[in-house]
Image (tube, rainbow over all chains, first blue to last red; front, side):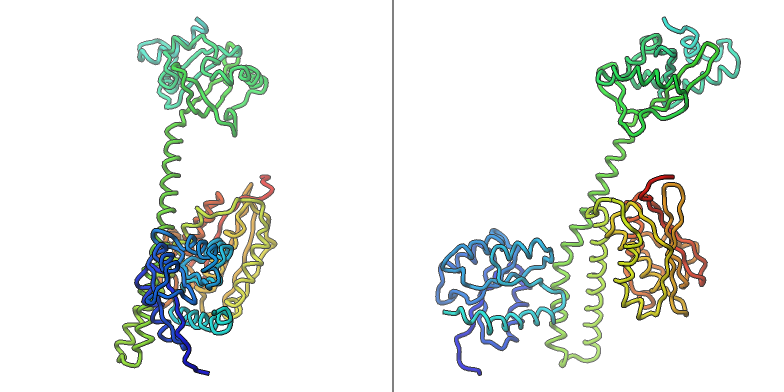
Length: 144
Length: 378
């Protein structure tokens, strides 16, 4: 099945350097070719989304932390889902929060999935693998 | 002015032992005068006949300004009209009792400020009729101390919550990267390297457990549900269901009396029983664990007991086991963070009860706690 497809463009919005690297490492183990673009806060994320360039193309998938400096993940999510040019991009919330209200609130704002940052790394790598599966089966249909 | 005899008697106490009077009288005066409480004696008409030094201090009047005056002078304006009928009622049924049970009482100072007080009333049968001796306590210092204690407890709970919550984040990073090392470099490490990583991972897991338990502990006070009539039997059955796997695995037998309705937070009740029954399984002896939950009624409270046939506890540890992070065993013997019984104690105390243990080493332990009965009748 392996045909030379363009790499999956992923935007990771995350301020914690350790978590950025961990996510990078997890995607290194992915079967699908991918490129990870990192925004370190909400303002940078919105700018990168609104002004895509060759270095940071418009992503196929957004991984979004909820607690961010300057503009937090909830606001970023809301802006993405209110923007006709961006709303089709699947957004996956990555958060340490397990609080029901955070999860529910994210879905109300239009999040496509919610992943609690796990303590066990195997679980995290597993989550990334299922994200990939999600991409291969569902999200690909929406790819222009 | 007013009843001179009592007035003079009070004076006598002030001026020293030269005043001639019977020794018993004299002693009474001394006791009244030196009482740390404000003492006010009132006759049937509501006229003040005697006050002591503390009353002068408390209300800001000299005794000359009070003796012979109506007691209503010390009652705030807003209660003044309702006071005389209550007073007359007391004379109809004179018996020692606290005044205004369940209500907040106030006196009024000469400068017009209100003073929160507690008042005990005693009828005094004297030669010239019936008097009422009121003992007045200024409760401001106590209220301040209580407010301070409440504030400091809340602060401590908030602190524990924030600390434990914020500690999780860096800990997750340590944990993730140690695990990533193991995942990526396992093949390239020698036996020592693998062991070191295992110790690091073990330490992180333990700290995560400690933090989780500390959070649980801090939530007893901050995240509790209201205390309402709750069926202990239902809570017990729910606990058995949630412990099902552990009970099966250890082949334990748990029995119980018919358990009563109590005033409680159902979630915390389940947590209490889970911790106590969990301990009964954990600290088992050589036989299969057996536990019995009993209930006996004492006045307005139920005493609930959890009796097991485990290893028991030496008397010198009866208090210590309820202190947070206190453990009696090496971690290799019995796992745990030393938070379980501290949580139990905090839950029981939040319900207005107390918890203790009775045990002889090698002959099992019996944990008892009290909870208010739902019917509240003594």
